[in-house]
Length: 280
Image (cartoon, rainbow, N blue to C red; front, side):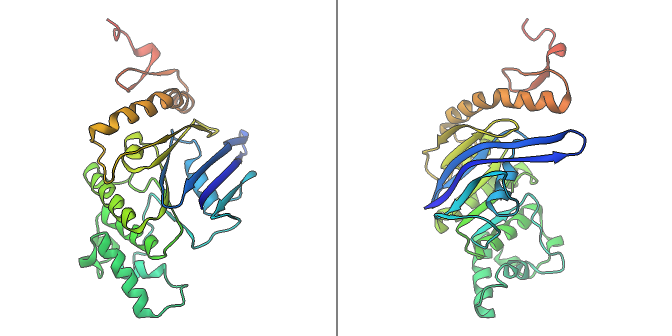
């Protein structure tokens, strides 16, 4: 039971260059109640994987199954939280959270109670009558999380949801999401470009190659939750994943900047022809 992805491949077409392979022969499993992360360089198809699982786009080949039922279209059992919170600006925090329950055949009072309970879980109980423009970026994302959880999906898909907030807010959100998911036991697939974020949050990690995205390695993070990115026990796993991804980041840098780049020992990308004196 859970999420099973088998032999997934997809290419996009661009008029100027033709067919562009995005992901290629990707297979992985996420068990029910697991928090899994896909970590990889920019452009490796992480968001595309989520969109396929959500039923928003169809792959060229391969299958996605949730609890042994194959995915062919969107469904409320799979909910995406995007980088941008996508709140309705004319609605209050409570109205935004309730909106996800519109299709459920339950009484208005029950919908309100469900929404408020999840808003309290993300510490927004005092802001239910506020409007999105009155909230910080982190608070807006917490509304989006509460709205998604209120739908009671089987799988929560998270597309780099903390990438647009400052470091301090991100650390706080990392701690909060671990606490919430420990209580709700949701199955989660979270994509990120940050190795530190992936190791901090995940029970299981899938490391993706540069485009076309493939699974290079799979790791388990057998550390108790909640964790923080600065926990020393996470360092060894972070280093292992960094080594696997080093060449992949170099490939992306070379492709995007059209210049040979190498990763120095400090982890900073430096053009080979501008690295004078570094070995002295």
